[in-house]
Image 1 (tube, one colour):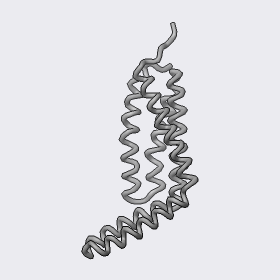
Image 2 (cartoon, rainbow, N blue to C red):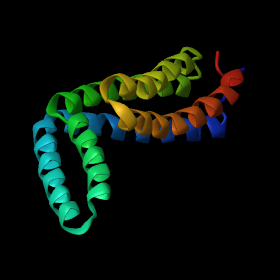
Image 3 (cartoon, rainbow, N blue to C red):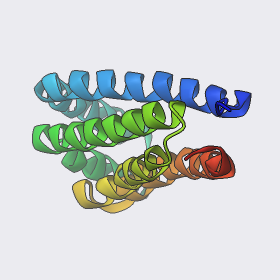
Image 4 (cartoon, helix red, strand yellow):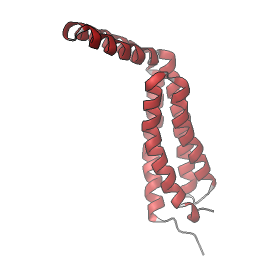
Length: 158
């Protein structure tokens, strides 16, 4: 008797195909445009600083300038490229994991888990300060949900 893939697992895999495919495309785009992203960030930070100095009191301006400095220091060309590489690797792992789970292969679940871990842990090593925590928390939220949903379907994989 042939194992049939449950509809819920099919939907999860399709969502992962879409999400990971878009993630790979974004990673390639971010990598190739890292220099431009870095320059645009610097320009935006300068404009923001000018507006803050004109409209905010000294204490508020100091706080906002510290936040802007943090963002600017985290969006250098090298860090944008490193983030793109890590994102690309994580998305390839989750995509391959989903393809294997599509074929009801249990190894796909573990590969997906590795990809999810890379996507959550990498920002902590690449970026500094609050930006790394925010990036990891945002990615981690959806990663945990999908890992749990795939775990529920583990009994259907061989």
